Every structure is written in C-alpha cells, then in structure tokens.
Image (cartoon, rainbow, N blue to C red; front, side):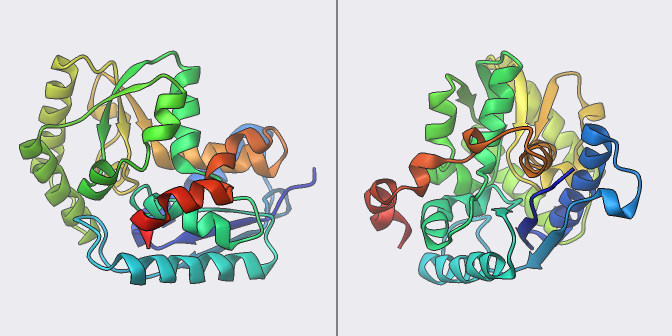
Length: 256
C-alpha cells in the first residue's frame, strides 16, 4: 500500500505532539492493520518553539513569521502534506497555507466534519482564550451547521489556567474536576457533546471522565491524517477556501 509522507509541525505544546504521534501509530493499526515497521508511513516531526499564544496574541507578526518558516521547512523536506496538532495556532492557517506548496489539513475542518458525521448540531467548545476570541473555527463549523456553546467568561479563565498548568507538566485532579463542572454547565445550556478544541486538554481529560460524548481533536486529526495518507479520503479534508489568495487577502489585516 502506497502511503503519502506526513509532515507534522509540532511543539505547540510538545507533549500534545507526542500524544498525536502515538495516535497516528494507533490509527495505522486500526485503519489498515499495521504490524511491522515497514507498514507505517514516513513521518517527519518538527518541534517548533513559538511565543505563548494560549492567553492571547502578544507577538502576532513574530509568531506568524516563525510558523511560516516552520511550514516551509516541513515543505522543503519532501513530504506530501502537512498537519499541525494545535488548535490555537490554526488562527494563522491562512498565511501558512498560502506560503507552502503542499496540502495542509485543517484541524477545525476535520473536527467539524467528524461531528457532523455523528449527527450533532449543538456542542460545547473547550479551547484557549485565543481560539475563542479570534473565532478561527467559525467558518468550518457554520458550513457544517454546528452551533458551538462556550463557557462563560469566568469558566474560560479557569480553563485557560488549566491549560497553562498542563503545559507546565501539572496534571491536577482538581483541574479535572473543574473541567467536569464546566462541562455540566455547558450541558445545561444545551450542549449534546463536547469538543476538546485544545490539543493539550486530552493530556488531562479523557472520555472515561464524563458521560457525554467527547470529540478529541488530537484523535480526529490523527484519523484524518492516516486516511489522507493511505488515500481513504481526498481533498475534501483540505480547507480549499483558506488556501485561496482571496481568503488570505480578506483576513490579511487580522493576521499580519
């Protein structure tokens, strides 16, 4: 079976990139029965340190420049397509996608399509303050007729603090309980499922911790990555509009 070579722009955060790599391996085993070393696709992982973007965009110009540099480095290796297992950094997706010649799978589009396939139209959305504030996900979920329900301002601040704790290596039981409480409040607002729209959250919080369906964006991106690599899905998983010059020019003032 011919497999496309995968390029991963990671390091945002480093531990979630490691979990994503493990999820890729498991998806190869699940989707086509990979057993031996030779069964797996070529995978290049570039761990790219960037300024903190969890709590805001303090250095957007510098951050975009670094991400474009990282994307070009991935492109130059000779991979067939690229992924970036970080929801927050996808705010810069338009500028990054335009800077490279290879396909770039969008984590928000992959997630929206997955949720739509399961029949949900109203889901709770747990993400960084930056992702929520700048609405990076908006078009993909609207196109798939999915309404997102967000934590209130107080809960969002709690969630951001939890994400910062995870990044620092602190996996606290108290933080897990706080997430459960936030989810209960989202359920009371009508959420029928929950999106972990920050790839650091699954480090602490899993499906087994709650009785509502969880959509883990690490797992969703890993599934889409392997399916694209082996040809089970095609360009429908790519954000064609965001790759276009018209989209980039429309949002250029927001990201540069």
